Image 1 (cartoon, rainbow over the protein chains, first blue to last red):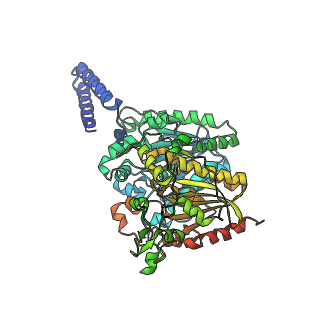
Image 2: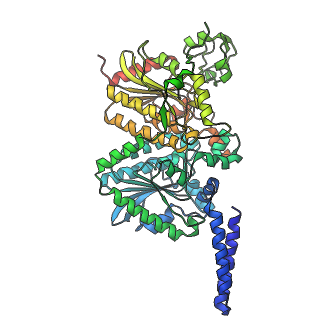
Image 3: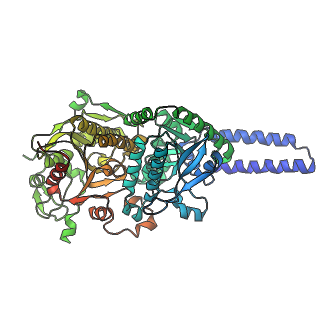
Length: 331
Length: 280
């Protein structure tokens, strides 16, 4: 996306001209209008038909708004709850209470860092077992008091390594999944950036699954897929296309419920607009879920997940060609 | 050294699988041995004790009472929802795996008796795309648990899987949630679920259904973990101990209840299930 720089340059030019226009009283109006037209058409051209890989780049853009940006913008304060009560407090996954639409809500959010220090603290948004166990704590709290749960998914994946395995990261993810499948409160999950594999799904089992337009959700990172399937990480672009990881693809496949539009170029180009769109969507979805009987809701959630998968019965014709050999022909 | 090596598994060698000669060479001790003798010995080398892979059918035969297994799966196969292609089409890989294994996907399940106890057992087959969990494996695990609920009997799952199947994208990922959802119902029905982790039980399978057993048993020599060495960033791999993600590592870190030798697995399952089910 080197063309993004051209756009930035044009934007700066326009700003400069505007400033001149105001200060010197020079009449640059028509000049500015021309440039603005040009900027708009360039922008359309660049972003109207983003490739899947380009969306991956936007989902990971260093300026992309993170969970806390939305939480601060959308809700009435965030009362953070820390720690898993066992091994520590993961800073890549935050839990807490907030107010939304006149009621208390439980938030579970994966948070990336912006600066080097922040990224050290938040481990680039990679959740550790402590994080998933804290999430389960928050889920239990939500259920106990009937608070709806909203989760913000944004992680490259669960944190790998020795400490994570010693603390049974796989088991922690599994327990979180299990808890969400039967939790007796409405759950809305929004993928705001990267939905990286099991580490994302662990807080993503929900009654409504939403994605920002340029967010991605995948069983494996494009780089990981490329290195396994082609033995070449450089082929991540192809892998991204093959994995169907964009919001549009996933909506077509019936795996998510809605897409929240982003301004051209991505959420970071106009945070306010993105946040407003997200707020509207959350209001609507919550209003859909709240009147429902919680047992009906849990049943519907069960039915939804139970039916995910694409397979077909094997006909006798298809089987006929296959020699079924279980024993070696050694006799 | 000999003790350490005893825990290692053989890698599947596709050419060798196809090779229908009478003899095989143990990859651990190099001894030339009768294939049949290895198979009859639970796929354990009679010379050095090295384990090699069980196929799903062999595993079932090694665990359940002779002649009691009734295959309950209805032969379903993946629809290839993404028409996925990497170096070759996924559809082709599937077909090849089907030819090679005689299975439609990486799992077999059915009803059986184990030491006289009725059970439902599901076993993954590593030969089929690394035992990976896509739509079909996820569906069959769910059906197996539903079958256990219908029959009101315990559920035993033997995992041998690298994780979620990449070629089915988010459909595979969602099988983690799907199997967890049905597992919750099994718990609500108060039916026991014993999860057996063998070489390997990793990725999306370890991070979902395999870790949700009431009792989790590791077969000796198993590899158990979420993210393998390959996925861990370079600077962090230096700290990894020799036994990282082995059965011993999993046991010492409280990831599994017990570690059991292959030849003892059947008796182990019989004893543990006996606590949950009254023998008629």
